[in-house]
Image (cartoon, rainbow, N blue to C red; front, side, top):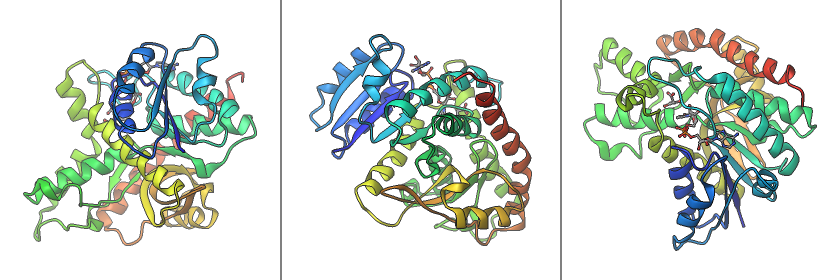
Amino acid sequence: MVKAVVLGAAGGIGQPLSLLLKTNPLVTELSLYDIVNTPGVAADLSHISTPAKVVGYLPPDDGLKKALTGADIVVIPAGVPRKPGKSILNAQVINAGIVRDLATGIATAAPKAFVLVISNPVNSTVPIVAEVFKKHGVFDPKKIFGVTTLDVVRASTFVSEILGDLSLAPKVVVPVVGGHSGIVPLLSQSSHPLPSGFAQESLDKLTNRIQFGGDEVVKAKDGAGSATLSMAYAGVEFANKIIRAVKGEKGIIAPTFVNLAADKEGGEALKKELGTDLDYFSAPVELGPEGVVSIKALGKITDFEAGLVKAAIPELQTNIEKGVTFVGASKL
Ligand SMILES: NC(=O)C1=CN([C@@H]2O[C@H](COP(=O)(O)OP(=O)(O)OC[C@H]3O[C@@H](n4cnc5c(N)ncnc54)[C@H](O)[C@@H]3O)[C@@H](O)[C@H]2O)C=CC1
Ligand SMILES: O=C([O-])CC(=O)C(=O)O
């Protein structure tokens, strides 16, 4: 029995993400919460012939609490997407408040659930969830995840394009580390190496395309939002890994933005490797029934990649502090 909850389920990401979760036969209950339209989305999805029972909730009559009660996994794509020409930090104040309030609901109604944060800026919203949980005395760093899977998905796709064979895309594995902004694809560790003699200029371009993949979509959508369909795909890729791990499957590894206290030994080793004292970082993480089993080291990386990691750290630090300060200044 797995109860999955989507907060922000009527949105551009929320709807296709809910659809994909409904297609997972391991999900037995699917709760959809949003400030608008969830009864319609739920009625629509409920006609699909898969096991999950779908119910839509709105804020009145304790809707959030009802949606969350008994949750095993909560995915949060609630919030405002950024506008063209703005950075991923656009709308951060609105989203910070939304995520803080939803996290309060989770901390009280489903404190043991796995929480998967999609709402941007992920580097700040994950610390926001963590700080709210700390205030409620229910913080477990092993169970709070920033979803950086779209960065991973983009890396697989763009590398397979370079290799001239898109059919490789589902098999190409590239660890992506840093944050979701401050993204560093470790292309030297790609399961499918880049063509020999791949020029530094081409590597710069490919790296930049992965780092700023979101901009490509925002520009193409021309005012109609940011990535939604690819994000829904990526979000469910990650959610399904969590569900498989909860069900006891071993050896599942995925990059995700986590509090490094989730694995004391691995976290400390990673901090040493990074030469910083960051509390959060996105790195490949092994998942198990209780959440994070271990956080992996970066391992052997090139000087180019090491430079990108080093350059990402100050902004990451600022983003994390913003999230922590925001909750510190909030009355909860
Ligand atoms: N982590 C990642 O890689 C990515 C993150 N994002 C982020 O995901 C978020 C959502 O993006 P879209 O779905 O395109 O936006 P959207 O505007 O289409 O949908 C957001 C939904 O959140 C709902 N919402 C607003 N306040 C709420 C509240 N208090 N409680 C519950 N629901 C609430 C809205 O009613 C709406 O249905 C944005 O912050 C965006 O930047 C987007 C793409 C990739
Ligand atoms: O770029 C954005 O605003 C949305 C996002 O996080 C992405 O597409 O990776």
